[in-house]
Image 1 (cartoon, rainbow, N blue to C red):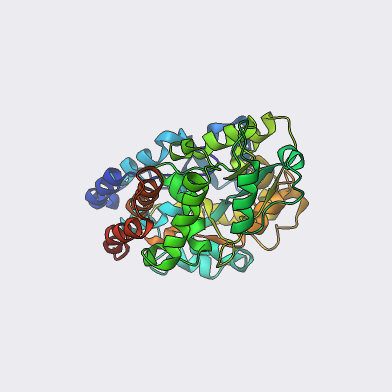
Image 2 (cartoon, helix red, strand yellow):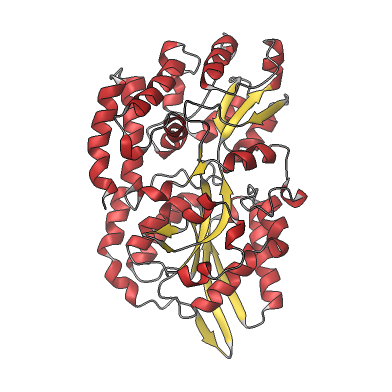
Length: 420
């Protein structure tokens, strides 16, 4: 997965179990925010060193804050994305969770349920800027009715299409409904390229792409086995198996793979996020983006991105809040979070701000974000739930299992996970 997504990662079940065993260690941390000579030092972890642009944006934010707040020093540690979640789990088990950490929004329930995060509700509830955020973004910071994170970077997925292939096929507008998408994908499938590409891998990247179809059908994880979930499975089956508009390779492709295929001209359309923009641009052809084609219940997409979490054992929670609320204010961070970190505007007061329009695709993703769903609402067992969902999809697409039976079996697996 691209580091920019950070939302569609499978949280390893074994590591989550390890975290549960090590909660007792969270009571005594030597890495909590410390004060010396009137200066508070806060430890900070992120994985934004994946590119010079992103790394420079975070460095710039920290420098700007420290320049105006001589009483606070931020001790930043960058960790590779592939190792980041594992390092956080290890830090929690040993009681050395960083004072501030950028975590995937779907991970909020994981760490909050294990006692690693500070309850920031009193700060968020009294914050005059909270109402500017989309409700789904606010929801992504919560677990059991309490806020454990400060909104940060957001993204989602949408439909990308190759305008050159569309023109050659005599198509002037992107599909707006499921029926239109199926017809367009079928028409544009040739020996040279597939009509539609997306990730259907047996990972959270596959789940991240299937969930919008489930929601668009009027279903949800809690109601798997109903008519809507079967309808969603049949929809993706029509694209991959019946029409063969999507190549069987989608069963192994992650989102970066899909972006590479689109950029090489092998796919007329794809479902993917803004993080694959560099891949799309490599092709040298004209492309554009559009919202997900609407299903029976309308359009929907998954909420990706991160929130800032604060350690439960930080010695100066107020200092951590001051840092993060300052950075969340667009007047202090629009250039860094928007252009530097390629975030999609997630507030009412930034959606039309030109500072956040770092590419023409932003408008589509900002619009799609208004119908995004926060996956953290499924609770701390999301990793195992995601695994059951992707397994269900694989059974239908790769093994030919009846969608009704596959959904019924997935529901039996997921039901007890939702109650924890």
